[in-house]
Image 1 (cartoon, helix red, strand yellow):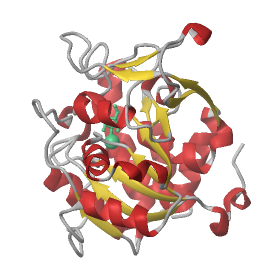
Image 2: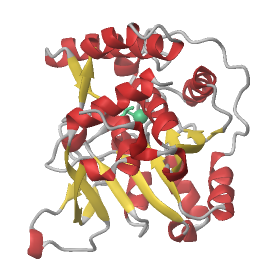
Image 3: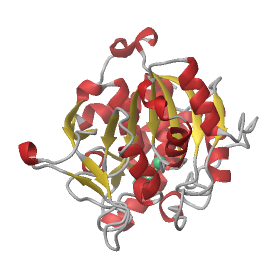
Image 4: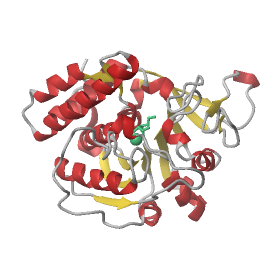
Length: 318
Ligand code: RIB
Ligand code: CA
């Protein structure tokens, strides 16, 4: 079933800021946000690939979509600890085999944190949608903890319930790449919603979708076809499946189409000091016996087919 475009007319679209590390699925998330959200701006962070690439990719995707928004570069490394990249998943420069023209203009500043604070002060009720390591968000909260009361939500792709990991047996990449930042965000008291691997693994796209995108005969359709082909080859090698979880668009759609998800409030902690579980999000699922504040809305279920249809509609209508 494809949601009609009346489901979210422009006046109703939630206003969001995406903080990202493009990144194949980050690119898909920005395409999805351009259609279903009122995208206020983009901040970049080092993650899948170094900051110079994530920032340039965000600017390239801004051009591809013809967006009149700002891009601000943020942290080039985690708060502490070793730096992790995911070039094996996203390619050396972050967009797989997709080659987009050089950006017509670079980032509007190299101070994403100041822009995040100014923008959320100037306009209350924005949704922050982090889909990379949480370094920028943690630094913004250190500079002004009261930001938590000015945002409508921090709806992030990261972590996992049910102990699922991807970068290690226990940890998801965005949290593992900067566990200290994630720990500060999860303890901040912010209105958190977590789209973890337990959810995003239910929402999958691959070469079948890529072949359909290629029939649209548009620059966005061609770009998405290239991204999905690269993703499909990776997951075929990794998991022997033709499709792969499209993690980051889930965070955008959780803001624009929350009725398509099932959430439960849970205490969530980030493991920082550990050998085997550093970067794990520990979700207390013991119900009435759970300990600690219900600090996070955790996504457990989704109408996956409809979500994929919404991503495809965003590509088709770009
Ligand atoms: O674990 C998946 C997450 O890590 C996604 O955001 C992907 O882009 C990578 O950043
Ligand atoms: Ca990402």
